[in-house]
Length: 226
Image 1 (tube, rainbow, N blue to C red):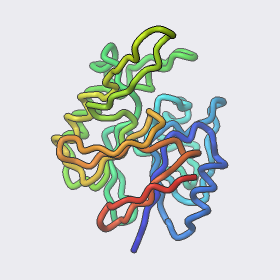
Image 2: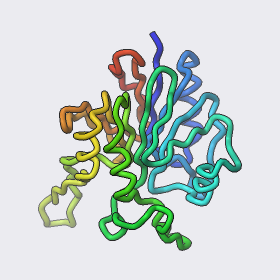
Image 3: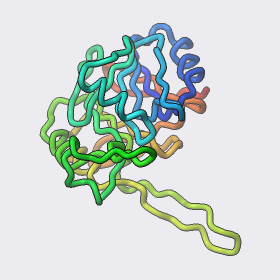
Image 4: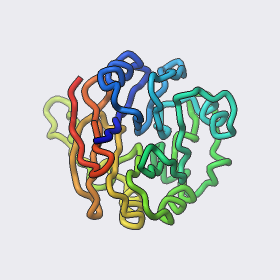
């Protein structure tokens, strides 16, 4: 049985990432649903190939360089938005970053990037439409979750909890059209299993808490606590 691993929201915790990878030397390929970089914008050199999509906390200049084929790191394999890659026996597609209605219609190449306010952290309509045209995808990785994804915000003292749906309809649209065998997302730092648009959808927790091992043939998965 061949297995692949899946991580989320590394946020520079490269020790936890390596601990997971080194615990399973039989796992040849790993996936990550975004937020790999540290606060300083550094990236790891993983001990095994790591196929990843951008989150909303990255060094987007480095990502632009990698997308242009420059300054590559051997085991860091970026999947740009609206594209797919062959990962072992699987075809994996990516739609990284977050949704912002103000910037959704902007061409990706025209997203402004000011210090501390880099709009390249968002995905745009053209990337969503590219994903919707894909067929034969085994795993779709997104950073955002599909709707509904209900979060209860802790209220100020004396107020009732506030429930909000943090899911994004654009992800539902991609799932409904693409029909991947499995959907993986992150961003919300919690483990949640759901079915959206008839597709199994798993939100993976931060890497320091848990990760997934996935059977490459059946795509059945096991949650492993750190």
